[in-house]
Length: 356
Image 1 (cartoon, one colour):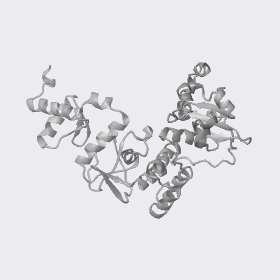
Image 2 (cartoon, rainbow, N blue to C red):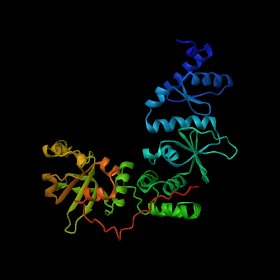
Image 3 (cartoon, rainbow, N blue to C red):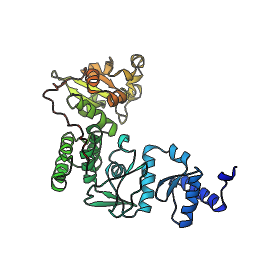
Image 4 (cartoon, rainbow, N blue to C red):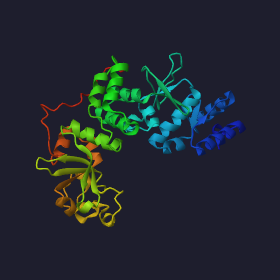
């Protein structure tokens, strides 16, 4: 080891304490003045990185963490260093368990008192929103769930915000009118609040997860009629039902069903009948294997669904997520009730004005 890379005994001890913290699933917080000096010396040697005031991590450990683990561990450390911090936006939503759009989880979003020093860090975003009422969840002080979702809905793109609005309805049983009433009473005058009310119009707690909500938002933005969610098609002989993520009922009474990530979930896993094991994964049929999902919707002639007057469409999340509106309209041509763009009301895009 060269002279520049040599570590003193206190630095070596702190290095081992840092790895002990990582082994416990947390970042290292330097609470003592001497620890801070040792940590700074190790950072100069590029052996550790500083993520926030007094918060350090091994670079390899930090890079190996998943998106949600990064946010959770860094927020936990900030809660120790900044007792007055209030977590907001997508960070608070993640801690509440009501949404996790990875596009909004690149940084910890936090509100700090005006007098608090705000150094710039790559993974921390300081917001200047009014916190309103706050909740205490373990070591975290958070904006309340209603305010958290309203802030996301008024400052984020529609396709990401819809998942959080759906999550509030799904996890907390909040009705659309409740959220509208809260926003009217507590958030009037905030920048982007009109956009938030547009998101509320599409609120639906039947969406299973954020991915399904984001796919539905892409359909709406492309001009496709909003589908029914979690459509159940009864099987003959009271033998359970088929379950699809999305469905559109045709004028003749039949259904167009769509499943995100292939057709393997058309039948509910909870249906424990003799036929279930054989039909559990409908996408295993030879024709499904020959038609890759990345090419957009694929029609499959499944005998069971055909007898029930249903057509099936397979939707791939990547195409819905990254395609433009024109491409999505082409991919979703098989879905009914494609609306005219001239009359279809779609959520307005984000403004470039500075948000409060």
